[in-house]
Image 1: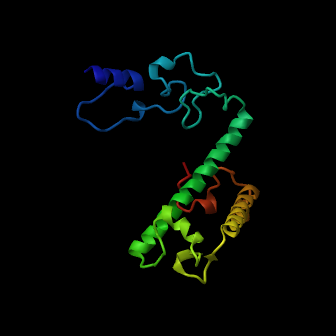
Image 2: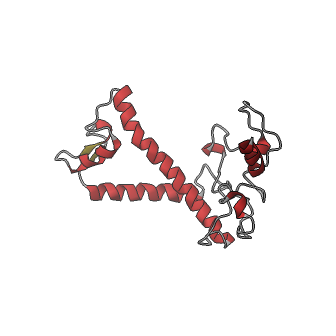
Image 3: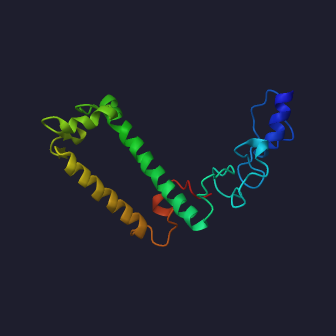
Length: 185
């Protein structure tokens, strides 16, 4: 059919089987000069020369020129990876109180993440894990200061390698930071 031929031409697939959901490795090319580009077949000749398809997400589109300088690109790449890791921890922090409240029997004033932060403005403040003896936050200023100090310590540990990461790659450290061996490939 026309759709199968268009898919085969766009993604470089030589053979498209009907009813078969198995996708071959050649069906989708993510890296290199023949990778999928932001405008598909209309991108030919409009991709900047410095975008060669070496990194994930390189679809040949950089109108602001952020990737033109290799040193700046390396710095942006590192910052983006760090922000993504902090965002994943934040997502875990959003869902953990709800799970503990529902399945763990832990009582919170409010376990829903978008309402939980407002408890700090209540008269009795915010009790972490529902226990006033752990962290009893009554001031948003002190909570912000504690956040800055804790994040600063974590970032200082990451930048300096820490005792668990001497001589490791800053972006993908492995060893003690990868107990399941997910970064081995």
